[in-house]
Every structure is written in C-alpha cells, then in structure tokens.
Image 1 (cartoon, helix red, strand yellow):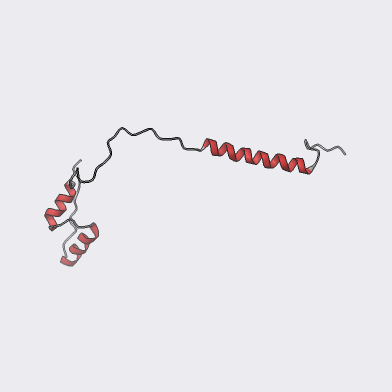
Image 2: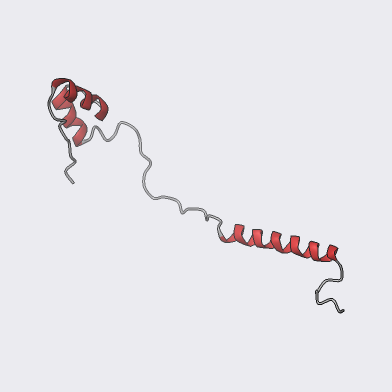
Length: 90
C-alpha cells in the first residue's frame, strides 16, 4: 500500500504543522495590530481654566454646595420630596 502523505515520516509532518501554526499566529498578530495614532492638534487641557458646568452651578444654587447624585437622593428621601433633576442645555 502506497503512502499518500506528502511527508516521508511523522517527524517532518510534525515540524511542518508546528511551522504552519506559528505562521498562522504571526499572520493574525500582524493583521490585528494597532497602528500609531496621529498626533492630536487640540491643545492640552489645563486644570482650572474652564470653570464649573451649568449643571454644577445649578446644583450649587439649589443645595448650597455641589453634591453627588447619591447625596441628593438621600436628602430627597429624608425630606420626603422628589429628587430634583438637573439637565444640561445643549
């Protein structure tokens, strides 16, 4: 009975399969790599040059200081009033 394999022995077949697996892994790695991003033209943010948002100032006017949503919910629960919602305009 004739051997229909392309390889003469099992060692050559194993070597070829390992190499093909490594080549496949390398091809996937190359195809999925991330390219470097282009340099941004926006100026870097410097803290303190914007000021509080419209919502933050509305919360400060309503409660006297800027409170988190959790704190505002607790205050509404303790006073029995519904939670006041603040929306941005824009």
